[in-house]
Amino acid sequence: MKEYISDRVMALAESQTLAMAQKSRELKAQGLDIIDLSLGEPDFYTPSDIKEAAKKAIDDNYTKYPPVPGYKDLREAISRKFLEENGLRYSPEQIIVSAGGKHSLANVILSLVNPGEEVIIPAPYWVSYYDQVVLAGGKPVVIHTSLEDDFKMSPAQLEQAISARTRLLIFNSPSNPTGMVYTRDEMEKIAKVIEKHEDLFVISDEIYEHIIFSQKHVSMASFDFIYDRVITVNGVSKAYAMTGWRIGYIGAPLWIAKACNKLQSQITSGVCTIAQRAALAALQSRGDDREKMRLAFMRRRDLICSLLAEIKGMKVRIPQGAFYVMPDIGYFIGKTDGNTIINNPDDLALYLLGKARVAVVGGTAFGAPTCIRISYAASDEDIIEAVKRMKEALAELR
Image 1 (tube, rainbow, N blue to C red):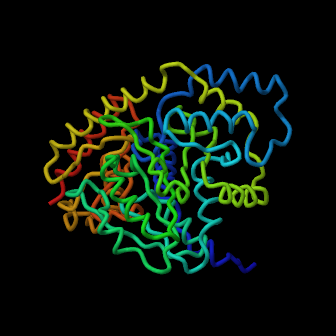
Image 2: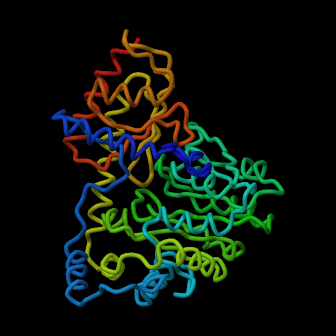
Image 3: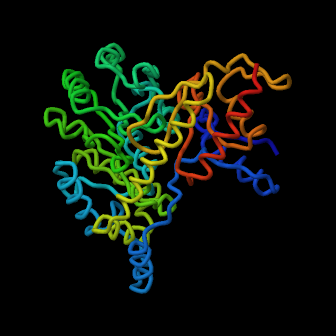
């Protein structure tokens, strides 16, 4: 039988982070000792009080279809969270709960972007931004940054990228994949550029806001002169070690929230009832689990960066948030161990998987053609052993 796949699906790339994680699992299943530093997933378990809330939800028979935008009490809790933690006023009606941050992003992009319209994406970027824009028929306009500039977009770069076809900017701080965090002053200058272009909207992806090490998180919507053009995306996956629960949410102008609600009603309807009750418990929690995880990530950040700095040819900027470091590995491109030639960062990632038994992700999928992404959401022991293996394998390249 002939296979017929739609053009929109054929245009999509497979997520390289998930692909590398799958290769790691396959090699582990073969009995190989693989240290996986590819996935953006906390290695902690969901806190006990959140799990208990989920168990109670089952006993309380939360087993029927939920409202499409999410339970009202959960949206009220998100509304309070936005006000208390971010200084943002989003009513419950301006909030849509979806099946993870990725789903929230897709809802917004599909609701705002028409075929042929441009979406600005600073690089390095999270892999799904680009392909979700492609799925919507939009045209990604990539702003390239460098390690020397801390991987941050300048206001001048943004201004230059804006055209009459620009509809959306996707902004992410703290950043996946670089771990870099914009200061309030840097963000205000970017917001001033946005203000001048009244048809330009902004997705502010703030999923890593609670994993930040040296400064206070700033929400893009806190600049009141662009508040009504910002869609804030967040969720419980990273801060509460709840990746598998699949709960993300947006705060948005009411008309955008209504559009996302309409779209979601035809795709998924409301998301998992039990996960919603767990998310409510997470947002209401007054425990210190979130802070303990943040401190652990900061310690691991310091550990892995000090070890990577000892590898000849690897250039590292100290990340200020999230749990990734993105070294520039341009020194190794063109080198060989006699069998494998490193032509790009993806080749290097495969080389490290095969030679060192360490899984990282090549930077091509992030719009970073001389970098790799390393997740330090792993134990100290695994980090130490992984970098030791990498150092030995890279030393064989000439």
